[in-house]
Image (tube, rainbow, N blue to C red; front, top):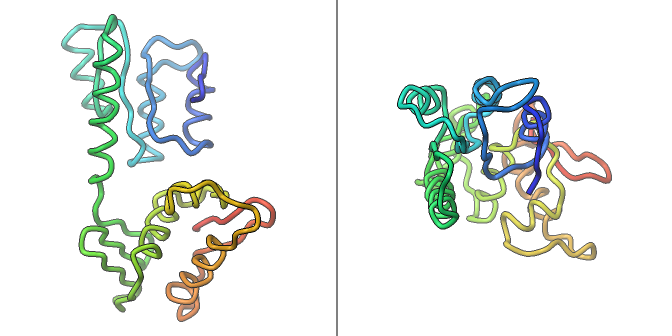
Length: 194
């Protein structure tokens, strides 16, 4: 968990770190929660945001949901309610954007179908999960450990080359036959899709 004490820092962390969810207060110094939310939605449609605030007016709740919050919780709240709502929003997030497009590549997660320039590309389930992770975090460097935890639900072992092997297989299918290459290696850090 990362904590930010002002709006600028919150926005910076949310965009730079690989967050699963943001709990956002409205009353923040430097940049209020409304502005943080607007900036987040302009740059990331996929990052779930729950407003967590003492402002309980109907207009505030409607405003929060209208500008992109996935949920709005008024203080004081029961911790069990917060955790239940976090789980609910994360479950919705798993189903959100079943079809993802990046330039000439289309990924249909539900149908396990990938096309590039109109050509269908056959991927294994793990290759599909890896591509989904890379596309949804495009322009962000993903470490081997992050990839291993998300795709294989394991901690990365420095001696293991499973991530590298699957990235190599994925490149052979979605990059090699095409002029434009998406997957890049960032030496010593991991991989980036851009």
